[in-house]
Length: 141
Image (cartoon, rainbow, N blue to C red):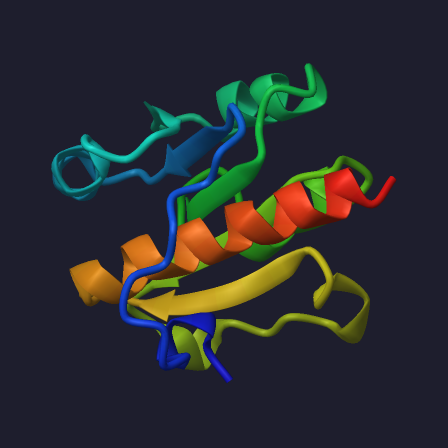
């Protein structure tokens, strides 16, 4: 079940400092995400380059990765495999859900599969929920 289908109508903003990275090979998609998420209480970084996203993730700076699935350099699933050892949650954005196969070993890393075009409210809610879950996990350490 998608996190966004929960009945909560107003998910509280995360309280901690978070960095969310949006990775897509389409400039219009990145621009749309920037517009949609500009008022959220986390830093949004966007990039066309999987290597740049991986660099930020390896530095321990990223709480959540929003990644396109079908990209020229690597798929979103391949990227999720690369970041699995880091404490970064992945959300895959795709217009081709039938082409996405998340292996059982990656289910903890790839938390959501969101279809393009997405519902703005549901995407914001999903991001907030995943960041709040992270805060709860970190509070229990």
